Image (tube, rainbow, N blue to C red; front, side, top):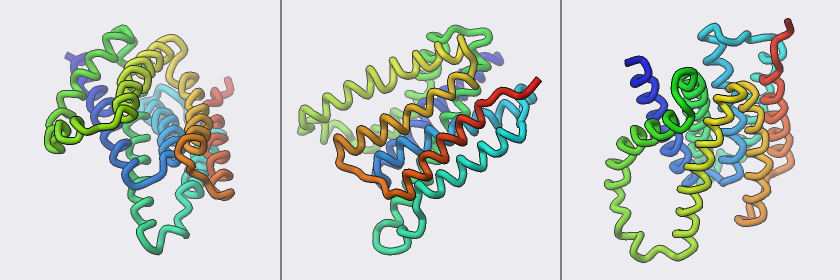
Length: 233
């Protein structure tokens, strides 16, 4: 029964809430923000959950890391330029990205706990099935069959990539890493997400970040690295 509840919440946080917050946020905020905010805040949530459950120690260096992440995210949001015009919608998108990072961090922690008794594939499969059951009603409300009939081939290609690479393979490899090296060491690799995300946003979408936002990105990534430092024995 305990495993069933764990899989239920894995599906809610990892598939339902994580994807809902992320894709809604992309309507309001640049993709570069989506590469920075969730990836730099989710490891902090994972660490705080583990510390709250007495499974990890919240050391001084990790406390500094949390502070750096928060300062970095604030600089990435760049709030002083959001007070005029429709830029305020970007702040909404960034807030949704933040919620998505919290959902992913919770998912990572719950998956690491569940895989003490279950395999990575079983955890992924049951979690996705449960999360998909909650996503279907929301998707049907948007009547996707109307736009799918006229969707460009590039949209279909992007959807196939999201399904196979961005979801199935990414989630599977993430769960395998969690089961083999643990949540803490695996979370370090989220530092690569901002690098590739910003690079692809610049190359493919023509997005640019202000210098102060790049400083914020570096602070956030540095904070994540500090959070992953093992406690001194």
